[in-house]
Length: 533
Figure (cartoon, helix red, strand yellow):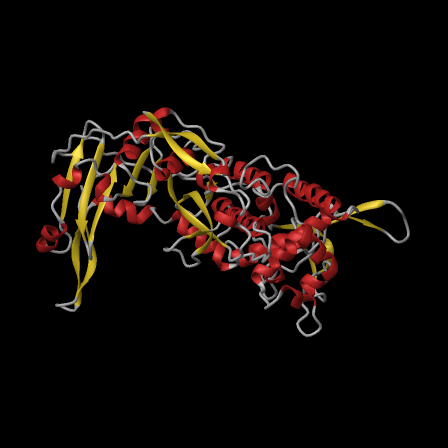
């Protein structure tokens, strides 16, 4: 249902202009009215409960390096985009070529990844005499790094098409498509993620989000798995938020939160019987019903009382539940709409709606009793346990980013968004490695980041020999990317030779991946110690 409303917009005029000379335009703007769903609530048992099994991923027999996992998300064409657009931007501003190469772009990214792990007060300190850090300073000169930092670009500066995020959109879409293409879990959560930004050049793109540790920055809506893997995301841009998304008439009548969930749900492969969890910013009865009815997607989320379409009158008040004691709950259902709503009192009252779960079976959780000074079991409905167990995927992704955040402070507003995307790619790559590896002790995130940075600066580099003009590819034989990845290192027999680690020992064993001889005897296990940090 659409209504046309008239707004008066005055056009700025010179200060000396009279009131009668000021031009006024009448603009008609179409406003779509929200369509309210009619729901008949009862206290009958919910008939549409469903058991959802978690996705079991097969361990990969293929041995991949951290760099290979990283390039699944931050692919080679993204490096090419950075080189092309940064060189173009320098030419547009200075009129001279910057001549950034593909290898230099990889060096630049590697340096920023290392800076996220090894922090110094200012980025110039890595090259200073007092605090020089050779792992960074030996890769690139400070002057060259500052040049790339100044002219880093991801889109043609003259190609503004009205998109509020056009300066970073090409990069965002490439990374987003890479995230969408990976094999998905069965359960997802949708929530807000904040990209910290304190600058003044972002205009209304910068938002205040009161419930986040860093309250000022860019708002991104994210669909993540319960593992913390990011599968899709959507930048908040006011009226421009859904610029590249299409909705039908029913979806278009819903609010911002519901449209965000629907937009992020449309990229789910084989959506039937998948589950999405969200909080009360997004939840409405219309959304829960629409996801199951239109896409076959189950959903569950906390809901505000004023969105229950009359259900709040059927549920007992907060005071009544409090009198019944901790763990008291009440349930209403609409089997016609395939929705169940449960109100539960813990330390305060919560209301949760779902299209696949209800209060049963009721379990118990331990809660501290102040009067008795001990923990006691409290009734906990199934719908609450489902929410608590599966809602934290986006928060987990946010936590992983915060551990080794790649902070690229700059006046240009789109640089923090780039560093956030870089961190998402690294964390997704690490989670993918943990999902696929057969190694009983997977490498930690910090080591994984360092391995990516090391590989970016060494793997498949073309070098020129001093004695010949011929080119050759150099891959260091003991690079961290291979030596410490704990994947595919198996001993094989070869001709007798000197051990790589202890030097004095003679051995017939060789690592079939590192291609180095290593002792493998009862009193001297160089093979094991060589592959440990």
